[in-house]
Image (cartoon, rainbow, N blue to C red; front, side, top):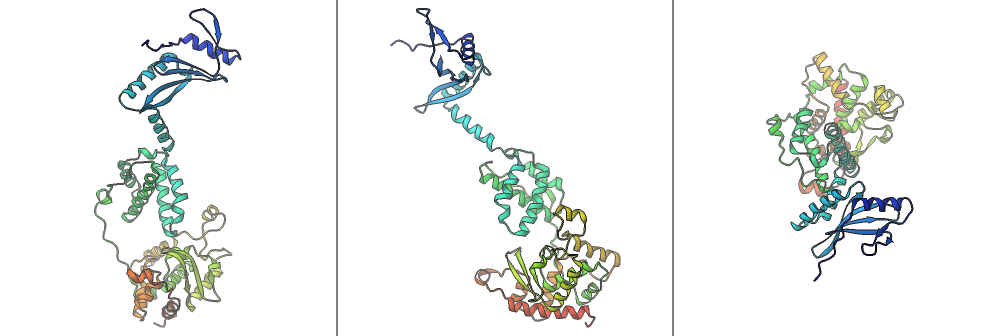
Amino acid sequence: MQPKKREVLEAIQLKHWLQAVQSGKVPTQKDPVTNQILPLPLPLAKSDGEGLTFTLSKSGTATWVLRYRYGGRSKELTIGNYPDIGLSDARKYAREKRAEIDSGSDPAFNKRKSKASVLKDWSVAELIEDYRGKILQGLSTSTQRSYGRNLIRIQSKLGTYPVSKIESQDIVGLLEQVGATWSESVMLLTTVKMLFRHAAGKRLIPMNPCSGVELSAIMGRRPAVRRRLMLTEAELRQLFSATMRPENLLAVKILLGTAVRSAELFSAKWDEIDIEKGVWTVPTTKTGLGMQIPLSIPVLDWFKELKLLSIGSKFVLPARAESRRERFGGDAYINPNTIGSAIDFWLAEHSPEVRRFTPHDLRSTAKSHMRQLGVSRETSEMCLNHKLSGVEGIYDIHTYFEERKAALAKWGDYLKQIESGLV
C-alpha cells in the first residue's frame, strides 16, 4: 500500500496566501507537475502533515489547527493564529501535543478544562460579593451584621487574592493579623469558613482551606466565659440615678423594662412603636421572625421622653455624629457601641458601688428579677424572646402575649418604684 502523501508547507507560501486574501485577491499555488498557477478555494485548509493544518478564512483570518483521533473519535485543537504563531513554532507545539496524545491524554479537553478554570478563578472580593447576594441576605439580621463586619475584614486582607490560591496558612495569617478577641475571632473564623464553603459549593475550589484550622492552636485556650450578672436592687437604684446623658439613661431603662436585645432598640423606628396601644412591633429578631412587645406604663413614659429628644428622626435613638448621618443618607440610628460606652464612662468616672456590666446584662437582670417576682420560667424566657428547648420549642407556637404583658407590667411597676425611690 502506497504511504499517505505528506504535504509540507513553506513559510514564504503562507505569507503570500495571507497577503493575497487581505488585499482582496485569490491565493494561488503552482502545480508541481505542470507548473501551472492554480487558484485556491476559500476557506482554505492545508495540511503540513501528521494532523497540523493551516486554515485561512475569506475574511483573512489564518489559524493553526491540530487534528487527531482520541478514543476512536476525530478531535481538533486550535493552536492559535498565524502569523502570531509561525510555521516552526506551530510544528513544535504540534509535536508536544502529539506526545501527550501518545501518552493517553486529550489536549483539547485539557485546554477547555484549563480555560474554564481560569474563568472561574475569582478573587476573594468577587466571592464575597457573590456570597452577599446569594447567601448573606437570607440570614437573620444579627447574623448579617456579624458576618458583614467580618467580610469587610476578610476583604481588606485577602480581597485581591485568587480564591483558588488561598491556603490554610492564609486563614491562620488572617486571624493573627486581625488580632481580635477570642469571641470575635471565633466569629471571624466561622465567617471565613462559610465563605469558602460557598466557594467549594460553586466548585471554585476542591476543598475548604479552613479545614483543620483550630483557633486554640493560634490563640491558646479559650478564656473562661464571663457569666451574665444580675444587678441587685441596690445597684439598680444607683443606676436609675446615674449621671448620664438623658437619652442614654432612658435607653438603659427601656432595655431593662422590655428585656429586648440592645440591637433591637438601637435600630427601632418610631413607626414601630404604638404609644396608644402600648405595643412595640419588632420586625425581625435574632431568633427569626419579629414579635410584638407589650409596653408597661413606665416604659411608655420613657419612650415618650425619648420622642421629645429624637429631633424629628424616624429612629428612636438617632445618630448623634454628623458623619454617621451623612454616611447613611441623612438619618441613621445610634452607633451600637454608644450605650455600652456610656455605661463604662459612668462606672469609671463616678465609681458607683455597681459591678461592671454591659447592656446585655440588663436582659439577665430583667429575667432574674422577674423570676423573683413570681413570673414562670417559660414566660420569662418568652419575654427575652428565647426559643423553648426540645420538643416544646418545636410545637409551641403560642406567643405568650398576655402572659408577657402581665409579667412586664409587674416588672415595670417594680422599676418605677426604684426610679421613685420607694424601694
